[in-house]
Image (cartoon, rainbow, N blue to C red; front, top):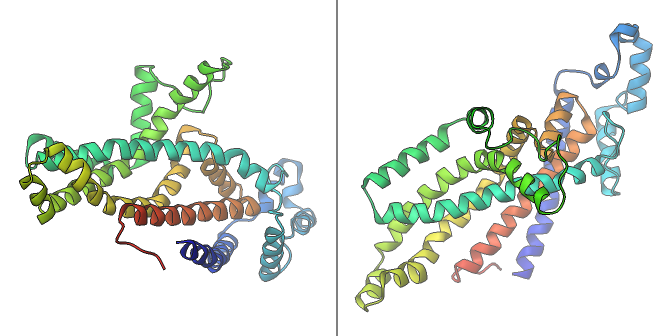
Length: 324
């Protein structure tokens, strides 16, 4: 297992290199000039070519593309991720200030989806072709197909504007200052709506996979043997069937990490959540090249490490798997 982990970590290097090259090319080939965001046309500087050229020289945008990439790569390997065009703060500081908020949101969303998908999938499998099963299937198709931003707006309108039960945007209350447990409760209230929307696609797909996987396992010969020995149904399910039924779900869990990271960009923007996804969207709108590259690479690292963790858990759940 140790050799496998080391080999996977080494394989990250060419993968991250390819991601950085593609991201850098796409970013610079996109229409728009970053200098246009920092020139005030009302003062006449917007029509001054000399001012634009001077600003491009200060930002290093006047150099050939391969030189810009080489400078970015060498500085990044030294731990210098550059400075944001917007606030002139170090890119790494901007990311690390918001990364915990994104991890909190994604972690809560994933936990909510797992805690709901497993029992719902189990009940749906044991009540196959019942009203409950058909209802779960309909809700699953709804959760997979509904656009997250539309669902976010609907939940905000219902629970924040009409009912007033939950706050609509942000991570903490602005008008009131809390400390201790009231501050924790305040963050939880702000977390409920965005985490629910972010968890919905994963919940919908995971409970369907859990249902189909458990139905397949229940029909296996060793399950019939366990029942023939007189074991209680609860023991048969929890000790024999559930562990094998979770294996496809763990595989799907690793594949769902890019969806969670990508969904965080949309959800954080809609709900005003101060995370890395919202930071990335603002950087794209402002054409902040260093910040865009920083957010892209950090997101890529998180997705790759998450898939590695899913493989490790997969080997732990299924003793037949041995990584060499």
